[in-house]
Length: 262
Length: 307
Image 1 (cartoon, chains in turn green, yellow):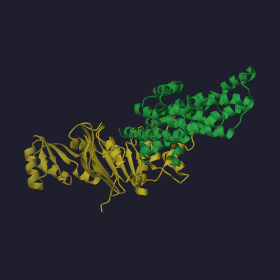
Image 2: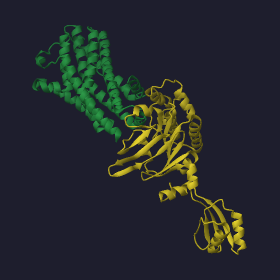
Image 3: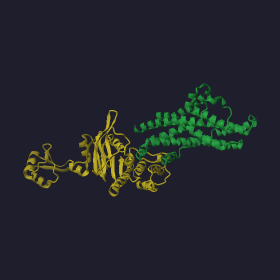
Image 4: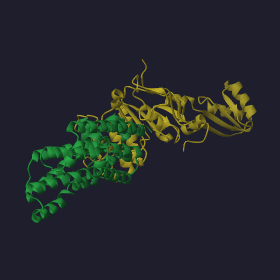
């Protein structure tokens, strides 16, 4: 399995999209640093630490929750269509590498990329924060970023089911990803009006609620008290997202197998 | 226990209402080159896909090394090298990178395997050229390199000379022959090019509209092929009497009043002509006719040539 994962990364060599993914990890931290610098001089916040907390929350909120589903969606389209586009499926099956092995590998790669993307964003934020503000709790923030990356990736897998199901071009996949992110953002802005069950069944809003609770617990966020009744524990979040990921993986495997046999 | 490396039992593949392969029974012997000959769309590729588990048979069974393929893929497939349809590789990688990926997936320990495979087909090792920049011939060579890289005991090659130039065709032909003669590999090769099969195969299977029409060795084929001596004479009735009375030949047929075909190539042609002339017959032409593979193919398939 490790060999297949290694090969999956090898296949991505010279893919320009990867560079864009890396660059997109800087998309939110860099402009937000400029805003943070301005806030420092305007006197809106009591301390530099408070400014960074706010800034970190923005990066995780927009940079990860909004951008990562799009990145994962497009990345998944690239991974899952790669064999179809290059005609290498027959070579892999003749080895033999089974459909299930391929699907599990590709999903593992997505999880690794999700975690790395999130970690990179957090690292850039911390670096920018160290320059302009005051950063505390670095180990926690890095762990939090990895958890966020994994949770968001798991929450994006239902979207990947659709990407594989429609098996269309990349533009279609991008459109679906954007739609998914926007839908999640709308749900997040309506937390108070939505029933708890619905909030918990939507993977990205669920991750947002968990993130708010976790940051509050560690003293890096104030103001989640209004939504306290909605906040899930880490175990609850992990369980719901694991179930989502498992069902999505089974569906992706079924469809991928069907496509390969056609 | 028989010596068949590949055996199929009533192998059938149906897409919707159309039968692509129908009750196919092929037998590939150890250490031989088996040529599967058929027109485009005859069912050659579908058959090969089923032999590799790339397409599930609608009915029937594939037996390789005496074991059913279904359920034994993990044991059997690593011992097979294959090339099916167009060469499939990652366009953003070089030939070496592509082969390394497949070598890693096969868990190959030999670090020189990629270089050796590329050397065998005449492609440069660690060349910077990407697969997407390759010509069709180079792509085909790379696909052959992939098929032989892990030193398989059995090779299943679907139209391996597609896109190769004449020198490349000769090289690959000699390479395949060498694999069989010197390394004892068994090769199943498909083609719609009669001359290629004739030059390479030890055994031949003729497939048409999904059905196997003939399966035999080239030696058997030569014996079965239509060979005769054609005599063009002034009176075939009298010529027939001379053949029967003087030479005790009965294996002949009268085509018309001037043409007679004698099916025994061992017959003393010179003496027969002398006998005809001495009996007052005018002999204008004598030809020895040996049926070509194309004629045989036409006769077996009951239709036009292969092209």
